[in-house]
Image (cartoon, rainbow, N blue to C red; front, side):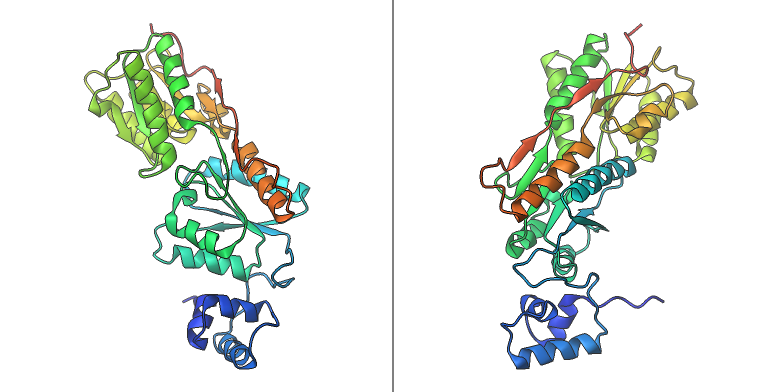
Length: 340
């Protein structure tokens, strides 16, 4: 059995001090009493505590280390985030560490605080759904460290943010499907409870309402942003007596699952069924037929978030906007066609 690694909160509890005070000792700050320093150092030895990244500077100095944290099952999305964030961090002279975070954990805010202190971070990047968790946002606000959120939906005045209009993008794709002659369109939502899921669904419904088209309840199915959920939802939609002539999935992974479901059912794409996705990730061009999709500039969004944080670390954000909205583009490929 692997022994659990001691955290800063464990040290603080044993030494009977606050996490903030324990962090001062770890960082070797001078404004700590000898009694407190001894208690914390004794706790560190007792629990065999070691910072995950050795502190290179005292508070007030930059470590040139940022973190990107994530809790997202969409592999393609995470890969694109990493590409953009790593490239930009390197350009800006920073190191980037990447940490998975379990949003369902009751200690998630504490874990973030520990990461900030133990790794001596200068700042942090938060993609969805972490960017909208109140406990994480409060922990970061209390730390005083710069952070940037990607596609947030709450607390617009809190921290730096980079986004697209998920609502407008989903609406534009739905309008395009309608223009192709499709009036019976199914929709697969993303991960339950996330802002992007709600905004994309709202955009779809708005376009359908504007065109005076009804959407049966069983034409909207819940997904998780994972391939398997798209496959399952696609099979359910195609088994209906009056099946849709087009299906719009909230990301490319799920849209690829719908294509597989169509192949399995002997339904021709796009002759009998048009399929659209969202992101323009790698999978969009490796499936057959290649996927019509919304191109979301994921890599550019991550790069912009990193650059905003590094500028704030250097005090260069005073005359800069704290929010950036990047453009999307509809990419029309072989998975959609005029309704026959």
